[in-house]
Image: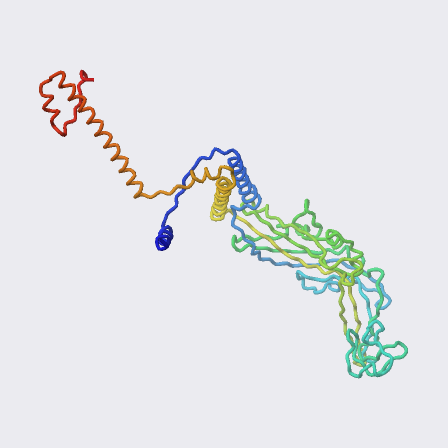
Length: 434
């Protein structure tokens, strides 16, 4: 018995199942199926094709080149350096026109520093001391300005160091020295290329007018192809005040986005600019702002080196370019249509599950849906029906023969008795016998 069950199991693997369509007159499931079809159709047409343009081949491997240039001058008058005229070669670091650059808006200057011995700053915790043993000779001050000499300076309560003296000035600025830098202009030239479609474009207006770039400023409506931005406007577009950022420094991100539909005209592919502040902008945070130090070195008449140390605050500009291009292609169109048809099939499966296993009359629908068909049993059943019909026909013929022969005895027709004696005779009675 067990062998028979296993044989039936393995043989059933080779059975083939074909679909059988049953019209279920159930309004609830019918409405649910139509609603599902409408939702899938809306998704395919509205979202996939109209919104996401699923009929297009996409290229997001944008190739980009950025060139920058700043213009503007500012005059400062400080105690240490006196009158000084700042040009772009002074306040832009680095000056090569890269996509990441720094603009000085404020600085603290420590002039005439020479190598020698002096007291460490009281603001450096590792430089504090009470006696000479606290200042190990030759040990570097952690986060300090030099090397310990082994002496404790009683006047300041800090170790004596060997370094650039006097040490850096420490005081909080109240007002940015280059506060007029908000009128500087930033020129951002961007070239992009989508290699898959061999498409190239620039964010600069293609014109032969030499004075256009000298007069224009970027405006999304009137001058979308003028890549010149006022520095103050660039910061305000990020939602912050230029004067506050100029005092403590900060970082601004400029995002240039190219989303091009190449099925449309060349002029419809335009750059979109967005601006955001990238550094922590909380006024109470110790990590907000941006600054660093650099020095300028000189030699006096005796050949001795000295330097001027600058701690500079300013605005760091990061230019980021992203983009994607699309163009009609038959392959993604067919793929998305096929995906839609597959979703339609999922609706059929979902409604079948409800109809066959959730509805009250699910057993009735299952009996109509699933049927086991075997050709041999069907053939023998057909032969049985044919044999039964043949037997019935022969019985009917025998009855008719007996009736006709009995009538011939009463009417004594010649020749009929002879025919009635034939075993295979089937009589088709004339009309007068009926």
